[in-house]
Image 1 (cartoon, protein in one colour):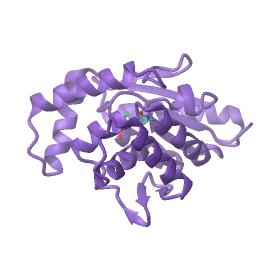
Image 2: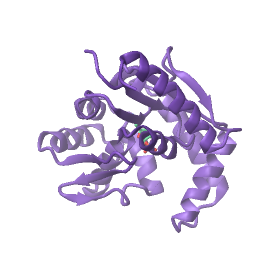
Image 3: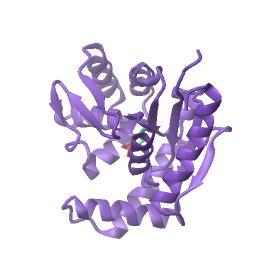
Image 4: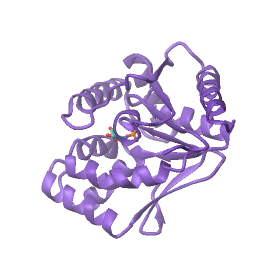
Length: 235
Ligand code: DC
């Protein structure tokens, strides 16, 4: 299908700066943000609230399918880079950002039924174009035909440091060593799972943010998307 405006896929490991970069790129272009990690986090939140183990594939699978079947989860974006997750009418955007749900999301996202349940939701959120989707498998599985694919990465040290600073800013008493361990553990799980592992799409532009400022990363990606968009005849 040809789109007037591109689908922009931004994939990469935890802590590479995807969320900030995605929001800023979307705001610069007037595109909508689709934070796909928020969907896995919401499944983890519902799992935790139900007292189900994150690795109980049967029950977590049922739960994810039920959430989608009753249209309980909505991603709400705006053209200024904002995005919220609504669960049964309640804004859970803040509630899904705990360390426990980071690990939980990583565990539930390794389950095929969960991924299958969330796939169409992600596709319908992005299909029209003019969107920036942030995730792990957007360029490889969700939108293999995305017009612009970016693989945003950074060294483990840099990513752990950034995650730690985010947690501290959010009032958590995290320690840097445990944050580093969790980054490594999550990378390992996300990139070795049998289904839709984290990996770079063959045609993705790799941006390593270790030595770049956010402004430089955003500028590089925006320039790339504008270039792609101009070839689609939009701009
Ligand atoms: O980007 P994030 O930290 O909010 O993602 C939470 C977890 O969800 C992450 O550990 C991997 C998983 N995830 C995924 O498997 N596929 C995606 N497209 C997005 C996130």
